[in-house]
Length: 530
Ligand code: BG6
Image (tube, rainbow, N blue to C red):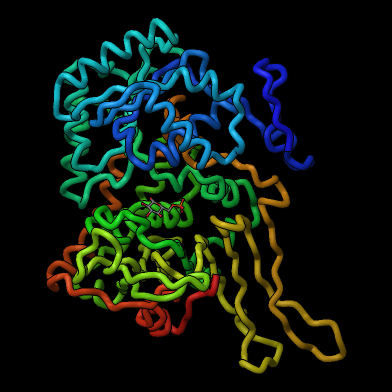
């Protein structure tokens, strides 16, 4: 590892030299945004320190930020620009994917960071911000363009949006690139708490911003492997003829985490895994797997196809919630040999909490492509290990020529590993070498690490730059977020109608409650061990 402390840009340090990989050549794309100030509301929160600031710093390293750039933190607590910069510097040092920090990049980046203290309810906060932003336009050349980033709970979204409008901090159009100053706004998830609150929020936002100015974030869409789903499906001719009910038996989507709620008990008590992961990340993975080819990669073409999938989901009746949805809550257990507490023992969690930390369900997509093909989806915390994958299980051969001890030939599986160990594996059957015909499962495996190197951009880098550039394809549209809630709402109401009974407990470090296995067993199937 080499560290060059020179401040000359031409002598910029190479912090982590990558091994030369011929498959990488031609992959690097020069993308920068027009001048702008990024204003982060909720700047003292974890997201700013762990994700947003490291992402912006990494964009500075890859020279993707415009010459006229500034980042302004807004939060309640009084603090100086210097104190805020120092907090951010610690966050970047700890969480940046490139380490150590390159002092020549940090020096220039740091002077562009500043802080405005104030309550989001107070008009004065927005007046202070306005004056500060004008000053930055003059001093740092941010040209009147603003990207507001609302890294705050959904209950505060409306207040901030109204505060911005009242202070005349919203330029009326999003403006295409190079077309004069723009104002855009990014909303961190969760977007609303249920369908009614999401609709209300959309109305409030719609009173102030045009939909083209609104960027609802789902950071899963910024992951390289998630973007690759579109490429894999639509840049290869091999899959499309097989990607339907004729050839696919069922699909399994798993978003498993081994971590618990990590000090976010208060937040999690309000969301549970259904609002935290299923309504957004998991639904997006399902949409990208099930959608029809869009006519282009424009934001509306892609999002339009995803909405069609959401509209085709068979609505959950109260009875089907009972039959098709399994909840669970983690109890004490062992994760990677460490003993961990039960969910109810986590800080800020009610001792009798009925919040679910695990959900599995059978989802049906009622259209010509998918009629009769179940999508089994599951998500949970404190599971055996961290893995997100989409597994397509193909149908069995119609007639087996080969006698095997279990009387059949195992079906082919295409597993798209979203994280970690990013890659795609195709499982098929092969003859074991020898005089006898013995069949074995084997896999063809593509690994991102070995083909492309492992230093890929973080989701937030891609998404922040896209928002600064006015590219909305990887953000959720108004009707899309409402369609997600429309599907999930009946599940939440069915639980509420049953009196929010505490879910069955599964031991931390396991693969979830037994009932989840029964859900598939009833259909003659079983979960893959990812
Ligand atoms: C967030 C959730 O959206 O996604 C967290 O709020 C979860 O609870 C996280 O841990 C998972 O993201 P990733 O990128 O680590 O899979």
